[in-house]
Amino acid sequence: MRRTRKLALAFPLAALLAATVVQLAPGASAAEPACAAVPVSAPAGAKIESVLAEAKTGEPAYCAMTVTLSHPGAGDHVKVEVALPLTGWTGRLQAVGGSAYAAGDFGAPLVQAVKDGYSGVTTDAGVLTELDTSWALTAPGRVNGPLLTNFATRSVHEAALIGKDVTQRFYHRPVTYSYWNGCSTGGRQGYSEAQDYAADFDGILADAPAVHWAQFAVATLWPQTVMNSEHDFPSSCVFTAFRQAAIKACDAQDGVTNGVIDRPDECGYDPRGLIGTKVACEGKEFTVTAEDADVMRKIWAGPTDERGRKLWDGLPKGADFSWLAGTGDSPYATGFPVAVHWVQSFVAKQADFDVSKLTYAGFAEVFRQSVREYDDVIGTADPDLSAFRRAGGKLLTYVGTDDQLIPPGGTLAYRAEVERTMGGSQRVNDFYRLFLAPGVEHCGGGAGAVPSNPLGALVGWVEHGRAPATLAAVTTDGKQTRDLCAYPRTSRYTGHGDPAVASSYRCRWPAAPVS
Image (tube, rainbow, N blue to C red; front, side, top):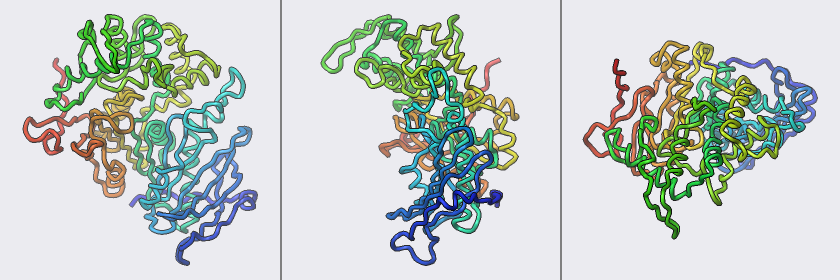
């Protein structure tokens, strides 16, 4: 059995004086640990400001330990919450990741970890909410480097150390296994941990990861740049017609017609085939123009530079367009908010920068500047995972092929780099498994089947050596099941049996390239 190593315990007097002791939760027995503040070791380079304990009643009852820390000279105040079940602790720790510009989640995911018998931990990194980047600039033209470092890498690592420390002191025994659980920003954070802090977690579940942050956070503005540059804004009805036409053209390529394009990157549908088609919706009729088809073609093709060279992947064919290519009265008509805020706050360093003014040349320059200034800070795409492999860690990821917010090409490109660096897919699969989820959108939803218990699969791999060859998945309506296959194998219909049932599919290796 693999155990995480003990942390050195040295509790600052100031934190002890600031700690608040709270009475046992109502109904707690004498055998239950008291919900009282404990001494906490400060991570290297940090200072503990306070430790507060609060008993949470309900199902389950748990003790919420909030640790506030800072970094000398940074002017930050970072909160880390450790949620400790009063009964039923399994010896496991689960760290919960964030989304968009939130570094963690103090709500339902943390409570769910407690329900499942974990001590849970999450952090706010000293920043604010999901789409608020007012913390980013200390002054016009000057980025708040310490808070960006917190958000990018530092705070998740420190939360892991604090979570283990608090848990050990609360239960008087160390954590047996530690896990990371996150999607999107949370997925990127998990990859950051595997790359930079290999000993923090035994198992990392990191789905739809926002790796290559400096690239994707600009690339998702491409649809708006195309429409603004071409002075053509197709209606939502026209975009829907293009999406449906692509699905109709490429759906059957995987051997079964089920409303899903398994591999959008292999779909060759040309939107020009829809020119002249009349589209009716919401009491109006639209005729698809050549300009509309050109806009759609460029959005699907993805960003290019001034000379037409590809910069990044575009929106997957068959994916929902509304977040990245919103028009009219859409709340996303000015662009995907994560991308808008990234360009304004971090690249242009002007909170009121108008992204709608970006030309093709301007977009390419912003893209290059983002990579130049921030890839080393928040790129999260170091393919050398040798330290994580040596530590015995396991990394599990699923990515929806219809991910409309973080197109899956970035994760596939990262996986390819890891394989080149670490000896090929079979050796990489010993510790890092990637699963493509056909028809699934960002972190779930869509027409495809979503993994039903990926964390359970990761636990089985870490604790019992059961490397998952497949992940059981089910559609949101519960009417279809499918077993997703460990990359590079893909799930393919056998040609007989009910296409809505997982047993009608088999995992197959990709066809060998023709020489």
